[in-house]
Amino acid sequence: MIKIVGRLRCPVCSEPIQIDEKVFLDIINTVIHQKCYYKALRRLPIQDEGSFQKMLLKYPFLHDDEDDSI
Ligand SMILES: [Zn+2]
Image (cartoon, rainbow, N blue to C red; front, side, top):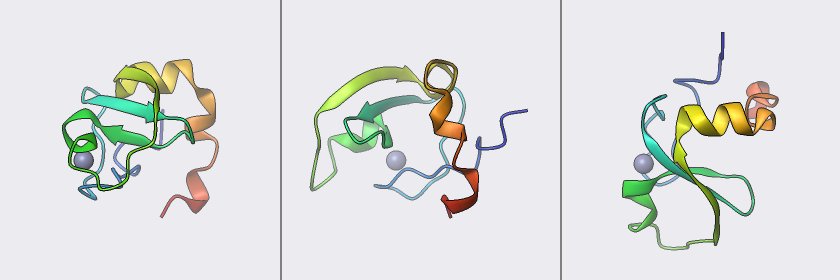
């Protein structure tokens, strides 16, 4: 179905982001765990927030670039 689930990693903790986890989407379209965002050394402004599932449904481009994500 949505192949990116389990493959997209949080840039802060490097863990795969799970479908039901709360995330932020920053202005350069990086998905970051909400719990990790506050630990990040460099933080960009947030453009949206919610569950990863919501982001995938709302922003189809998140799963257009599967091949260069690893
Ligand atoms: Zn994280």
